[in-house]
Length: 336
Image 1: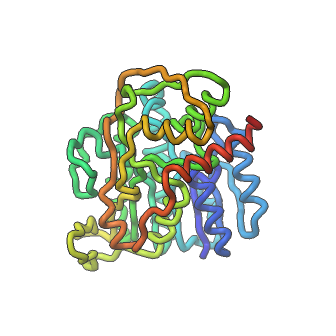
Image 2: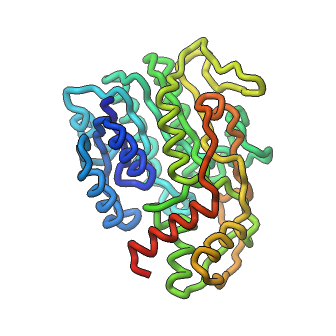
């Protein structure tokens, strides 16, 4: 296939593009190389992709609609996977304007491109953060998502709504997928695993928010990529919902559109996650216990019955193995 992936210098986009390239697909990778975190890490990810046959990098901002159109050129993609976004709950407290431009304007431009080139399937990354103030667990795709606790979550929820309208207006088959705390090698430096391992390696204390009582549905990157790849072949069709027992499909009655959780449905307490890091590193972390930050939720984990019904897949990588893989990568990259 011909595939456009936005955000290929990012953590998830890099891993997904590498998987598509390994399978023999042609991938156009669109990325702005923003300075939200270490640009050298982004460039090194892209360098790996550029060494693989079939990859064409395009450096540009989502806000530049013409740059997106030029990236596609004369050959329309069969599949568009929109991963590029301004991420991070905490960053949105101080810089909400970044989320308006990247997540709202940027997603609109991707939708406009998709309307024009009409791919067989448009896939858009959302987040478990959209569940916000929902007190029911696990989180089901049919739960109310009208109470976002962060501006980041609000922009991702808006992206889902925008894509539904385009799916209806232009008969554009679209799947939005909600991530749950993705981790693994080549991860983002602003995420907990990267920060914890770095601090422990330097002999510094780690900051543990929520007094360590938060629970997260930690999803290893390879499991996430497998899920996206499998969902790519499950193109939504009006009038063809999943009918498996106990599964509530989110297929829209008026558009070829659905939203799907991708997680493990195995919530892990933050202190247990830290314990897995300590065991792999052979060092007990010095912990600074802190209260919850604004915009954070206590527990997130996925009801993934719909995902399983569509893909027949369940996460295969244990927390211990996933954390070990990240620690080993970190040590090799940073020589610690």
